[in-house]
Amino acid sequence: MARSSDKAQKQPKEPGRIKQMWQVFQMTRRYDPNAMWIMALGFALPVLAGVAVALIISRDNVFGIVMWILAGVLAGLLIALVILGRRAERAAYKQIEGQAGAVGAVLRSSLRRSWRGSEMPVAVNPRSQDAVYRAVGRGGVVLIGEGPRSRTQRMLDDEKRKVQRILPNVPVTFMVVGPDEDSVPLHRVATKMARIKPVLTKPEVMAVSNRLTSLTSASPVAIPKGIDPMRMRPQRPR
Image 1 (cartoon, one colour):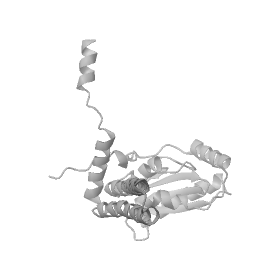
Image 2 (cartoon, one colour; image 1 turned 180 degrees about the vertical axis):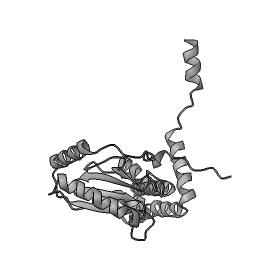
Image 3 (tube, helix red, strand yellow; image 1 turned 60 degrees about the horizontal axis):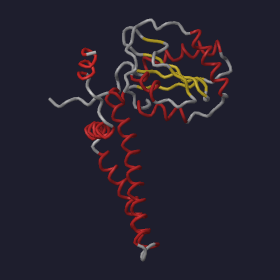
């Protein structure tokens, strides 16, 4: 009993919600200096709107003025938190952009429920570590190349032929995340996929995903699993 109590005392406590939000804000401000000003603007506009409405509608009612201002403050806080969340996600993905497995992190943590994807690639170049990831959703099959387009295009074409051999009526969409000018930024992968026109029903998505998963062989080369960007801590300045 004494040993168990000592172990419980030695275990570090998890930071509280406010401390976590402060750490996220510090990380976001370090990698995205404009985030602070955008958050301030997002907070100020609803507050000013609440004050203006209070003076116009409830000029002679003190309770009404207080309620309108309070509503503006609460709306401002909500908008500021939403902005912080989106900016923090973008800053976190910016830290891992260009690393092997970065696309896997997006497929694991940012896909909507209508999409099914794996953090492990379906094809890997052993020398360059370029990879192809696959996701299945109502928009069909999406193949995402991780690396320069000149090196991943052939891998994408090979994977498309494999998919079409098994599922000839399912549309296949290409996406490339890499250093090319026309490539998709890492933080916009999930958004791009969400905009693909739906062509499959939910049961069909499940059937297609299961069919492809059952026929996918193990990856020939070990590649780092997708990094969870929301668990990354900002680097300490040296």
